[in-house]
Structure formats: structure tokens, C-alpha cells
Image 1 (cartoon, rainbow, N blue to C red):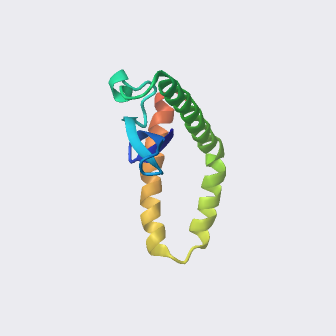
Image 2 (spheres, rainbow, N blue to C red):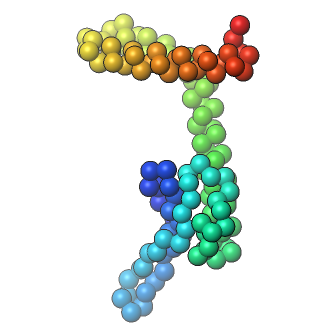
Image 3 (tube, helix red, strand yellow):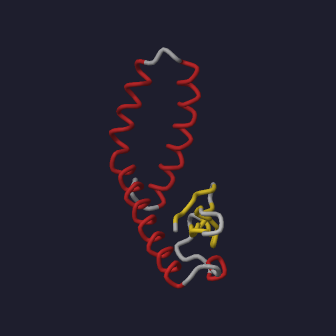
Length: 122
């Protein structure tokens, strides 16, 4: 069994050996949203109980990895901002810098709003 990402959907794929064709055969036995912590039972209706357990273990592992990545992004943000400032100071590609600066300002406004809502800024 393996998992395949398709945009925001995760496909649960079972691979079995087909003796008639003498080749492996794959079939999609379940689908759920990437953000689902507990997919609906009907989304995994074609899975065996062991496969459902494997799906739940995979989701838990995937959620933990995502959580670690988010924390890493927050903890390394100040260093990334410093490096970005250095790039903005030295780049000769001003057109790209302007576009990127607008994106950075939009994201900074959203981050600042969230920090204020949580009471992390005065």
C-alpha cells in the first residue's frame, strides 16, 4: 500500500500481484483530503481493517511532520528575513525584487495581524 498526492487529495493505493498478467496491479482503494486528521469511514470503505490502521498511522506521521515543518519555519523566520534583506540590498534584478517585495509585504501584514490577535505584539 502506498499514498499518492493529487493536489489536496491523498489517494490510498493497493498493489497486488496479478498472476494472470504476471504483473503487479494497482487500484485506488480510498481518497481523503490532505488536511483530514480522520477521514470519513466511507472514504476508506474498500480498505481492509489492517489498511485502515495503516492509513491512520500514515496520517499521524504526516501531521507530525507537517507540524515540525511549520515550527521550523517559525523558528527560522528571523534568519530568513535577514537573508532576504541582504538579497534585496544586493540584487540587480529590480523588477523581480519589486514583485517579491509586494508578496513579502502582503504576507507580513497577515503575519502581523495573527501575532496581534494572539496578543504577541503590543
